[in-house]
Image (cartoon, rainbow, N blue to C red):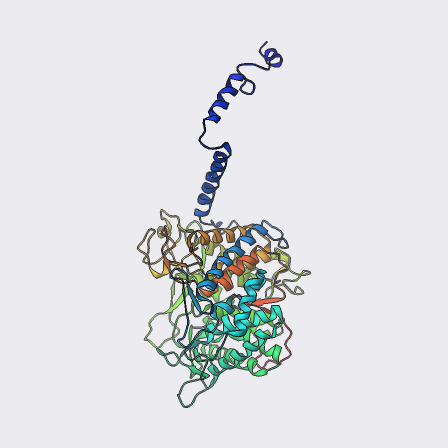
Length: 605
């Protein structure tokens, strides 16, 4: 009876859809509203969106446990246009502020809205040249044309002062060469030649000053005006091993496109000096460090100085460039393959560590001289410390696994070779499989260091070494030395807009198509947007990743434009944009082409 009544009577008083009294009441309520109904609807939608954004972006990107890695394959040939566009907007926010406040200055300070130069005599295009290839890749034509015009009319390297040989090479020479490669514009090659000729004087022995190296190692700085190398003012005979061994990609490419062999042989000789120093160590019974190098070397003797062995600062790019030199010349120089495989074997033997907690985080420890004054360079102790800089290594290991570690007959990173993702048992050697798995696990550790109040990783992480230490309220099996959430904080707690984790995520995405790597990258990007973005323009260093609201250091690093945002852009782009088989990235993320060398190398097995 009840059902029949409802079917036959459309004015059922219990049916809210047809009750006249309810409709009347609703109509009266709505007519009493202060604002039109659409205003309230829009406000409700806005509140929901804000809650979603705040809650999602506040949560740091979570890494999976070390045992859980299973590829969830996506399509590396497809772009995520929405996220890529967001990255481009971030670049424009950073660049437009610099262009407005400090165009032409080497460095930018977004809070004070001013620029500074590395020397009193004027700038050398640190920021402009470092950012050129990024804006070109992003298709920012007006910005690129204005930057190019500045290079054409304002850029000069005739500057008096001390300019770091390594930094100037990777940022400025690398930026000019990569932009020349992408555009074929002779303007950039002309400036590259001028700068390279000035930098080469760092390799020259200067008998009048007593400084220099008969071994051909470059001094750490150059006066670009007087064209003279400048030693370290605090340790005259000391140079950084990594800095001396991270000039090769740039000068070798310049030699190839100009036919000037001097560029090639100057930087190649450095590798020979380092190999000789390693051989001497082996002959003295230090074979267990076979492929590892101390972070300092003697400029006058060409022998290693007693110092730390690490893959962080002053050590990182030495190992990076071993693989990249091998790949740059189309795998024709076997000596770099050998040096790379020796180094990776020694890293596994001596530096790869795992936390004893439930997450079993894989990390890269450091070796510190046991007694700095003993004179015995064979005695080291492990320090369970990992710089953010070390997070370049996961990508290097994965790229090396699919190239150097490809099984016989498989050439690596080719459409017709190693699969995406690789079939570990079929396509990789045992060493290649080991390196791949270490790279995957290490990348998860790098992501674990983003589990902070801001979702950003600290400059340095220390790892807990006992099960008792790992039982913390935070669940973190690592910590920031001399810091605690909410403050006070130490230098180690800062995030300097660094790109290393994103660099490895880019390579991991290209080699696997696993969507988790894009998800990780987006999490890092949203954390940068939330905590490092300066409202008036630009981005700044976050002083403490574990304290919110954040405090800033007034500096926008040039590598934020050249590396961090470039790798983010590439992660969300098609794999046809700068394909890995055709390009090597220098340590400042400037893309240089793979080529078959026409210059005959002198350094070989």
